[in-house]
Picture 1 (cartoon, rainbow, N blue to C red):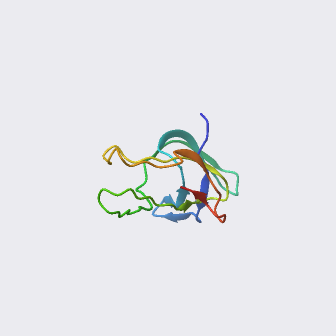
Picture 2: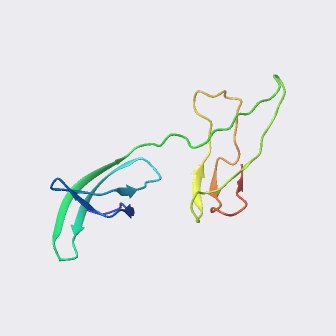
Picture 3: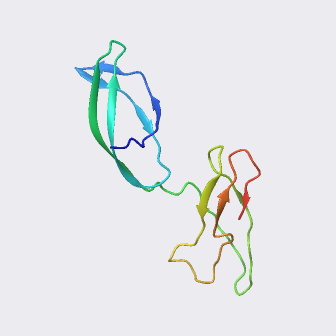
Length: 122
């Protein structure tokens, strides 16, 4: 079983009513199901291993654009996007299937610039 879950944050564990309680933050950039082993170790050398299934779902959109243009007149909008992390990231840009077929986006594929840079023009 391959461990592909990156642990971002584990707060200090507490013992409450005989149960170990802690917060665990994980992040996935795309929807997927992962089976992994979750291991807990104490400073005294105790170790517990549990098989876990993580189900990452599609997150809600974090932003939207409203484009307003005159009827029967071509119009366009340009903007720049960055990756939220300090590394390049591949992207696919498209309108959803319920959008008008006359709409288009360029580029449709490419790489977003890292966080802190000018951004990739769309």
